[in-house]
Length: 355
Image 1: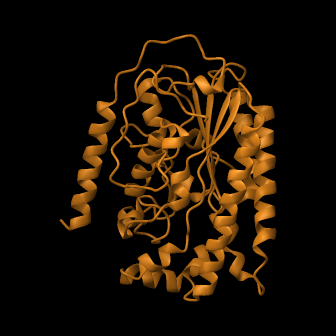
Image 2: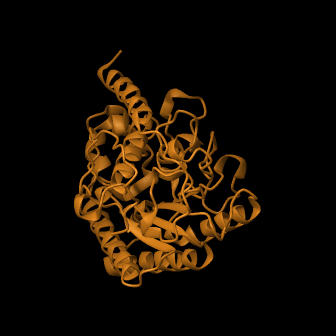
């Protein structure tokens, strides 16, 4: 057994130990009336989990080449919103305290391209689709609204809902197909406009919502990481279409998309600040900052299929880091991703912090 497989096995076992070590659920209480009072350890505070995004959230290529279903989305294993039994995912952490939490995606199916029909039986409230960009968020929100309305177990008016979003890779990866690279500011404007529109619509259409945003990390770092693997380097050379800007040997193009993603994150922080300036008891936009500075440790965090999408190990580590950040006040939130962080065990006084 090679070294990284041993490491993966230890991480997996450790992850289950960490989940099992979480404090047992507290007794149910009166449903909080303010979004700033949501406690993750209190049963039923969070009743619904949802997500929007792209192939990363959809779980594409998580299992790499270990399966004949190479082009599947492993939705139940998505660290952001998966709900397969025993999987190390954010919804399963919520479910430890709220066994009846609704919305986590399950199982796997063939990749679901942006604009294609969803698979509600498996997708559930995971609206993410492969190749999606910011322009596709409105259709993803429409899907969520329809699914919520059709689910008799969800009380739209009274249930607290959690929505996770990370988007932006596809907004930059295809830019290098253009003869002339568009100005960074105009790309940022387009991204911001779409993001603002969907957040505004969510605030109007979904009562009692904690809208969680993960900033984008530099996608181009996969280029250098892949150089340590002949397989990865060959895949990127032969099939550069997943992110032609990132896989190009031209450093200028990689620097260009990194600059755009920095611009995207500036816009995300600006949007969040605007929402904090108009406080609401039933809606909050919060950022978990560690993803903006995320450094991919090595190729074990990349799918063995394309050396681009996150591996199962990466999804598990992301889930732990998101959870830890959610239950940490803003002033103490980590600014960097640490794959060695243990799962935090909140107590009855811990909140999903909005400050």
